[in-house]
Length: 195
View 1 (cartoon, rainbow, N blue to C red):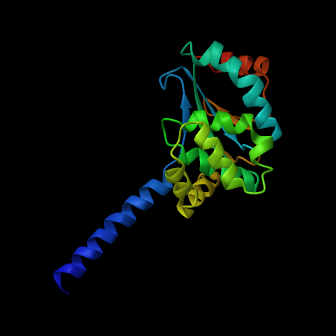
View 2: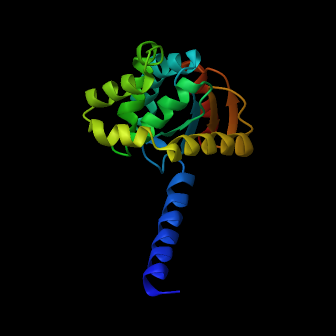
View 3: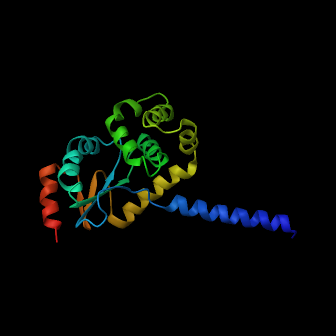
């Protein structure tokens, strides 16, 4: 083998390693102090009606009373239950770590518009532009098949790790709680989980 071929193979090997690492990493969206005494993981689907209700009605109270005070560390993980939700989950990943929650929140609040659009990717790009994202970079990320595969891998991990079968599913300090939880129900679970 000559030197240029070896260099190309080495570069390809490094690229594939980076690609594998980035595609297998979770895209956790985190709010609050990672050292909080209670950690709540939500497995949600952006097109799930009960998840939409949680994000519009319950999460604001949870943030105000528990996350901001340092009592709860909240983690969101995608568990898409429709093809539209997969596209939305990819859009959230493409927003990047600095704007992922902003994008997630925008998608939950506008789900009736973008998920019913004739061209979902164009509708998602419009939401991304509204959040200040570069449209070209966003579109490029959105069309990357590695992103969709990463979302599907994350869903498989949830099934294996916590036996997640639907959304929303919450894991509160390791305890799996299925279905929509209203704020008073979450408050009881948080108090129960406090050390």
